[in-house]
Image (cartoon, rainbow, N blue to C red; front, side, top):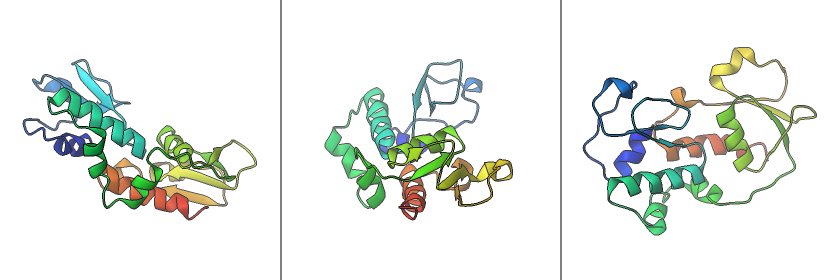
Length: 165
């Protein structure tokens, strides 16, 4: 998933590896929850603002620092990514959420995260067998079952959330 950001900022000399510590490299660009021994730049790609900030961070280390306007161009054609970028959406829908990455997305979309008195239960597809509630379940595709393009992931996930509003 990080490769998409690396490509956007114009870095051409890189290696994709699930185990960066096994490669000779100067820097690992990886998701923030990943841990490595080598120098790394952790990024987040769950929400539009996280994608924006990650593009900025990677462009800074690439030597080809992009302006905010340059980064906004990458959002063209992605309606929901643009809509939720730097937005302060709020609604009165209470949801229970299974997983940390979904909490970031749901909070960004303006839902109230609660543990009881909820209208919907949102869970990533990989936790389907562990969801205890039996009604108003909403499955959200996880990293492994959706496009590696972070903008396309936003469009799919936020479109699901918008059906609840």
